[in-house]
Image (cartoon, rainbow over all chains, first blue to last red; front, side, top):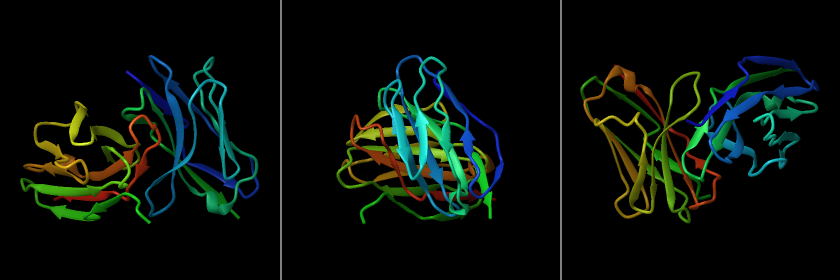
Length: 111
Length: 113
């Protein structure tokens, strides 16, 4: 069945460092891909999404490109801030039904 | 703001008791989803409704679990004869049909002692 594998954490970076969190997926069709973020003590929030191959989702300085050839949707940010500390989840949804999530990657950004 | 709300936020129960959680979706959304999240893991799909119809159930949803959405608005998730393995965060989400993007509530944290 469909699944998502994402980079294990935790990831610790200094402020202004470059961030990459890897995400690869397995799907039978052409899913939509998402990154959700969970800040401490808060619920899951959609960060960005892409619905077809080569689409780039972006929000708050984060970007991810839907790569069908490598079945990947890696999350990147050029310069992280302390406020980006959170758990990041990669997810897919095929046919707009249930969503499959990765295990999450905890990011800590130190000043 | 009319985001997704869940009640209660925390529930502690003894093994063998029944518990019921409520979810109120965003009012314009006709799809409602339930997920379970354990520590260090991503959410796992349990079931979803489109309006009042329950369209899909995961194999994770044992016969001790039942979900309803009687009027196509709020939903309840009941767990009968709770077990310690049921301890988790139960998340509700809603979306437009075909919209893909799901909006999540804050979750109900269940602890079974």
